Length: 212
Image (cartoon, rainbow, N blue to C red; front, top):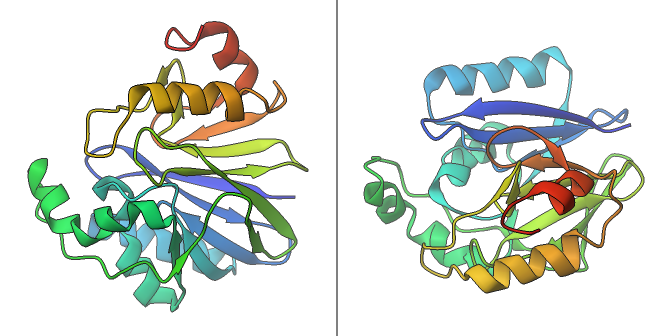
């Protein structure tokens, strides 16, 4: 069974996730760790749970989701995976931060590109990669079919959707992607969002004002 541990981090309240299973292997999704105490907390969590990190996978590469990538990559010697269409955001990490008043360090390039239709594996777990652009060009989500949950990043929130006014954003593309790809998933699918609380596909289909 997959355990999803959520860390609400950095000044933007981004949800950084650690997914692990009974094998003891784990992956980081969207590590936005910014403050020293957040670095200490994640070190303690990995050590106390005797986990073996194997990779970082990002839903997208806006600055609040990559602030902790190099800390994690250096700490555990693991690769950073993301969609190629978001590589430009990594290259512009410093400029991204400055746009919002943050002084952040450069982030090294993505180690391996992943695209729709591929499978992210760790331990005994498989996550299907689905491309849902619109919030950012290379935004992907990760779907675990066997346990019916979705890591949605900033595509879909509880009662809302991701912003589309940043470079590469596209409102209609985002709406279409949610309706054709995410709303095709079973209604009971639990959705872990990049900010805020969890939700379900059924709740958003029936209640989200952007999508009903």
